[in-house]
Image 1 (tube, rainbow, N blue to C red):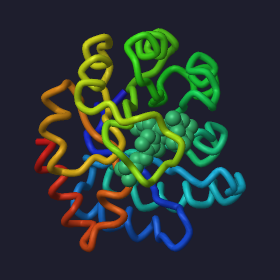
Image 2: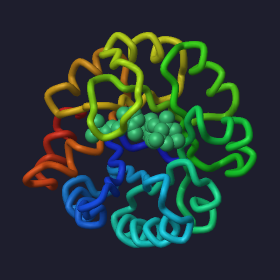
Image 3: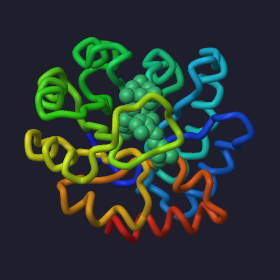
Length: 207
Ligand SMILES: Cc1ncc(COP(=O)(O)OP(=O)(O)O)c(N)n1
Ligand SMILES: Cc1ncsc1CCOP(=O)(O)O
Ligand SMILES: [Mg+2]
């Protein structure tokens, strides 16, 4: 399995957003270092998720960037993505690993050391850990737990920990110091005035 990129851009498919323009801009700055996770609204159809994934893959492939799909593992497989990401409301990690096969990238959400070790035993190749900071992108989340929450999880596992939730370039150093291997962002890139520049700043902070 190739090494995982440290910067994960999660597509912003809320009404009025333009996820493909964001992905294009981020790729010009991050190239092969970018992981793009295709995440669609729950109300989107599988056909819409599949078509967006195919378009994102077509953008990622020339750069050698990695494309993952959130939640919908059948879409990941059908589209030819490198893997997927699951959380508490999705397939259990062991089942997700069976679906994706042994070599695919499989991310799992974990907020505590016990869940984290269980996910790794079940076959997760990285963990998404958050919300680290307050976010307006996903409603209904528990309170943010800051870098200390990342430290607790990172200390319990030997797979890459990707910090998520309200991540900005300014917040990256503390998250890295707490053991995060990388970060996943929506708003830091999708709401930036200059998404390519925002991507470059995040990469600089991660280096
Ligand atoms: C890298 C990363 N970490 C966490 C999540 C959240 O996944 P989940 O808890 O299943 O919530 P949804 O994104 O499905 O709403 C993620 N997608 N990526
Ligand atoms: C999907 C998800 N899971 C936890 S926080 C989050 C959204 C992160 O978005 P942002 O980077 O805009 O805070
Ligand atoms: Mg999910």
